[in-house]
Amino acid sequence: MKKILFVSLILAAMTASVPSGLSAQPLDRIDSIPADTIEPTSPGKSDAESVRSQSPVQFREVWGYLMRDCEKSFKGDEQVTDVCYFCCGVSRSGRVNVNVNPPSLPDLNGKRRRIHIVIADLRNTKLMRRVLDSSTGARGLLVGDIVELSKKFDGVQIDFEAVASRDGSNFVEFLGEIKSGLEPGKVLSVALPPKTRKVNDAYDYAAISAVADRIYIMAYDQHWSKSKPGPVASLSWCKSIMAYAKTEIPADRLVMGIPLYGRSWKETKVTKRVRVKNKQAKGAKSGKPGRTVVVTKRIKKSKSVKTEHIDDLISRKNASKEYSPETGYRIRFGGKSKVTVYCDDINAIMEKFLFYREFTDSIGFWRLGMESRDMWKEIEIRTN
Image (cartoon, one colour):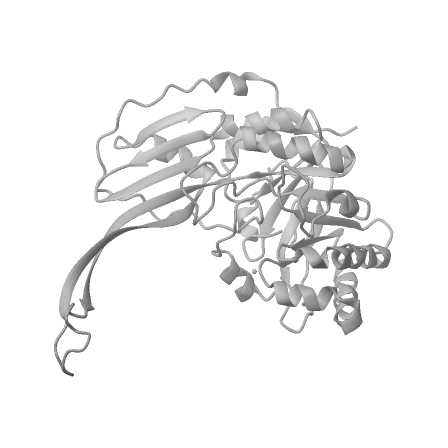
């Protein structure tokens, strides 16, 4: 990853649209649900309550992204062993700010959490091509900056989401140079897009996992801001991602990402007056007036929803809601502006805990500060 640095560059990238399964986007919560909504239909009955009756799920490592300038959202009771500090971007000149310092965070059960600096670029393919090409000299400068910055942190995560397929070999070489330059004990992790099969892209799971210490799979954005409404990470989709990942990445290096956000799609009717030419305009005398017509169309706008707000949304009297462990909650509001929300609650998130734990003992979250605080009761850090 996230979550494009200059902080302004990253924030601009947060709202960018990306094809499903190619990138994890930093997302802001939905502003509001409109008041002009219809009465609900009968909600579907949840059958997932039994999930939370199980003991907390044990993991060796739990990773979580913490946005720079959002340190106050970290309360201290999070069951997180590794904090990905998001982020430090690649400037237009191909350099990074080496003056970023790690946040001061409370220990977890008397043990210091590891803090990883995230070096991110989410959409600048041309910049990526230039800085990954060893013949330009830019790669050496960027590697030098990253290695220098890493001295303040426990590790470095590379989140380059716009690498073209033809630059894949250069990307692996670049990662190898960073790994070679890191001090002993420093962790190199790489955030990679979710895939259900081998495709011709720059992100060769096997080749990258042979270099990096951890591979973080961004298993979210199945549906995104410009797609049709649907779950951000349905359970069956996550299972397909794991089925492929486990064939390419060693279990002790694999970290499966889980979203702490859902998404809303708001459909609004827009009416405009448009000036058009008369049918007789062609060949008519200059200055002949056109005519004005009224054009009506429906547009969709999408925003993210923090999972901490799911209880409030489903408790609203005017909400039509359905639940399944597969998709989490689907909530619909009607009226002049039709809104569809897909968002996991703790039960649906726990379904992912239980499934991923069968194959790996490391999970991660995008992003800290968006979760229900009760979620941390369902995780236990394994100490042996």
